[in-house]
Amino acid sequence: MALISVDRERGLLTVEFRGLDKLWTLKSRLEIPLAHVRGATHDPGMAREPKGIRVAGTHFPGYITAGRFRQGGERLFWDVKNPDKAVVVALADGGTYDRLVIEVDDPRATVALIERSIERG
Amino acid sequence: MGRPRTFDTDRAVESAAALFATHGYEGTSVDDLVSATGVHRGSLYKVFGSKRSLHLTALRHHLDHEIHPSTAAIATLTDPEQALTAAIASYDNGPASGLLLLAAAERAPHDADVAALVAEGIAALEDALRPSHGDAAPHLTSTVLGARLRLRAARPTVSKEH
Image 1 (cartoon, rainbow over the protein chains, first blue to last red):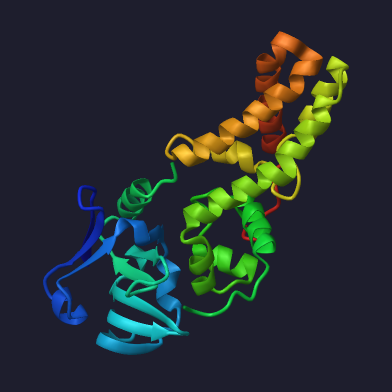
Image 2 (spheres, rainbow over the protein chains, first blue to last red):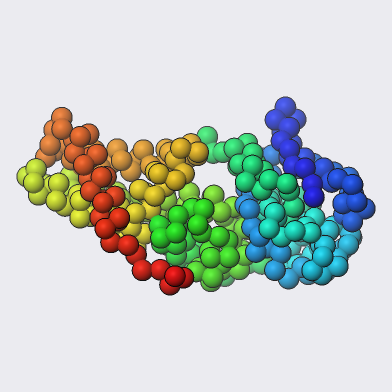
């Protein structure tokens, strides 16, 4: 589980990993410029996609997918135990990742928060 | 980076629009969109960024290819009765029939971008009824929207899932 928040002043999307998730993902937080965030979607089915090659982190299939993965030429960052609460954040080309797949407490609220902060004029 | 785009974006948007028009925004999952469009999940995210963005694109497509052409045709009619009948029969129709009405009810109250597209579609109808109905055009616009809603309620679409 992670906490996703938006820092409007610094123009950042921040993902803070809690408890053992810091260990599984080998990260305590991610910071992404809001300008690189293309959108967020609640997507429980994402967890059934092939995970590709683990670059760094933890993968116990069916239990936890956490850390950096490479799949079909794309770079994904995962932190998901419960697929029902997975949110997919699509990022612009040129950054460290193409997509984040993050389990959050309230997917609906998280998606609304992210989408509102990047709403087209 | 990533795989080259190997699908027809317009066709994917059309399939998505039909799906959103049938099941609503919340009722359409990414799984549904992946199977209906035949596009890989990764490519969907690569091209559209999010389900919300795909919905906005589908709504834009519906306005450009359905709402605006049909309202342009209605605007050429000067006979009030004829214009009203044509509007009730053809407004917000086509392969994604009801997409605008559904977006107005479900998404516009929560999403300013959807609200703006819905307002554009309703304004187009109002403008189209002005040549035939003059100052009564706003009133007749509400009549058309209400009639479309009643038509949708009276003719449930057959769903494969139930």
